[in-house]
Image (cartoon, rainbow, N blue to C red; front, side):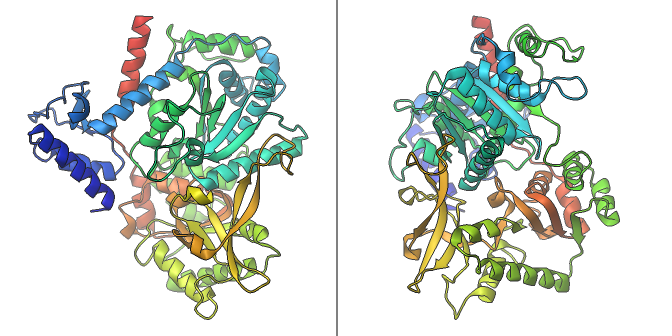
Length: 584
């Protein structure tokens, strides 16, 4: 049992003793176990007699002493019930807020991109910009290469036109790698287009944005809100319930929220699955959304679908479906879509026939594995010859091995130990060119879980570890487009308490990152984590090519299983929206 489960169990048992009540037989243990698998609730057996503790009435709580609650046929720990109520309340408040009348909205959007697609339908990227400009909540979702980052850049440009240069925008992501990639992509787009961004734009991890401080209160909360007018969260599929609740609590009342992500990717490690829950409540748009579409896209071909009269969560959601990074019919994109569709026979047949150039399936063979591992070692030795640590980190981002498990013969830890042995000089652990990953948030150093660094020997013979960190001083290079830049920052190895080699990493650790080439190594022994979302997330980390080292049995095992996370958030959102509309 992990420390987290032990602490949770201790808290629950203390609460039960305070109530002088026994929890329902077996239910408490099941809820604690479910928490470890990402669930925030469990469906109740309708035939089982449940007599929960005081305060566990349907939809009710008995204050701080409540241990369990039931809601809509689900049981959950009171802690998660409180968080889900808070999130549902704030999301519905944002989603059902009156739509703003924006003068010249169509012209603002048209200044960024084409209003219409080639088939005469409205351009979904343009619609996403229009939604974010006219209401407090926008949810932009789509698969890899569908233009999410490009849409964000156009949105930033449109915000300058709509709100002026004093409008403050925060870009954030759950991990440092995702935040770095988002900022790099938007900065590159600004430079290529020759259209600099003048607004004050801040990029950070969500923990940094909210002011995470170990053993202390977070810097920003409901009483100390964030100082931003718009908060944009990339890789929203990685948002867990507790972190998202903190964000919504710290979001100023006047601020706008934009969530961007791919709902088919892996859910977060911690309990909750925010993006799919929101989109599950976004099935039918209302006449309000139809009026917006008609105002901005008067000539677009439209479906015969009749919208609802009342506003819905769907008014905030925009799906991007046209692939741009993967050109139409391009192999890697087609393979990713086939994996997402869940047709294991088509996936296996396509891999056997070599249907997707750039997608290579390697049979399980120790000889082939060793050959490719030695090629990876050669890449690392070349990386150590880079002119400087910044270029070494860029080289490390071109290729990555991804595993399913941390432990075991096909796990990350074994592979990293082997690579360290092959690469180390005279037994040195901090050898020149070693790529490392931060495994815990260290806010006092500005380092967060998932940040990548490289060990570099200095002219005096000592070793330092370099990371790319945000530079916030005004007037530096990179500030001309109103955004922060990244520059290398070095630390003594002894300053870094929680790092490990990053020769290989898990797919979860790679989420939010992109590499030119990805090698996926897994076997059927990883059945605890193999799912369709796992395989899809691993494949879509690659921009150009992917190599799969796995048996047919392991691939079919992954394809056959989908992640299911039980919660009451979607149900609570639906009820909250109904209640608000009934009161209006």
